[in-house]
Length: 356
Ligand code: AMP
Ligand code: MG
Image (cartoon, rainbow, N blue to C red; front, side, top):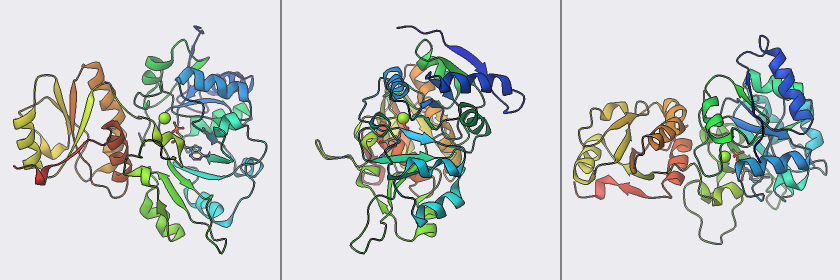
């Protein structure tokens, strides 16, 4: 069913106060709207209204057992959503909120099953983007907001991406700046405890708040197996989003791990018409294939910011295969690697052993 989709300019929380107020009203009345955040654009709806969350799943074409992150604008909105608010959670919020960190805790009865994907837990985040905060305040309710893409396609980092995927499927799309982080938030679960009752924090999805930062803040942090490896068929995913093919463009993505020289040599040997490369600045020029750089090798922030944008661009250019020079896995690089490994369905070629 085609809806009329309003395009609402919302670049500045004050100057665009009127359109933000309108977006808030649409959301409060049960509509859904694409909104900017610092990570990726989110498809927002009232997190406490099962009808609104149903609309989100339908617009995205997303399986309804995949839970949604609840976005809040004030710390005081957190405790009604959760069954408990342990010290560790408060320490994290103090350090990293507002910002790209999502914290999972046992949920309160206020959170509908349709928001938690039937899980007894709820994921909550306070975004940093001032327009996002203004929209949440204007709505007056916590907002469930998964990435504003059709399920299976790369997450949107510009309002035009949202329009490409969701025109006619949502009540409004906010036209705002490009996302600064470019990959989705870090997801950390605080739901597991050891025999002494001590919380065992577990990283379910890497993002711009890094594993190193979380360990510095909390001490030990476990890394869920789904972050770096493909889960076996039928294996239970702690973070249900991890079991779906995700972040994937239409082209086949292949990750190549190794130095510039073996990367170039491998491309010379294997590239065919229709192939493209996403490489580091230092790899250019690449003679064997047309290429886009996603930043310098050490600049993980640039790589994160450009990744989804480039995957969408190469889809538009009808790339058949994309050979991506794999980022290192420290800092924000772990998040970039995780998204790429999933887009590549874990097809990773280790160049040092590839007979160069
Ligand atoms: P998205 O909102 O599209 O960025 O995806 C949200 C991610 O958070 C997905 O990978 C979900 O599986 C994960 N998530 C949300 N809520 C929970 C939860 N209660 N338990 C585990 N993972 C969750
Ligand atoms: Mg998503």
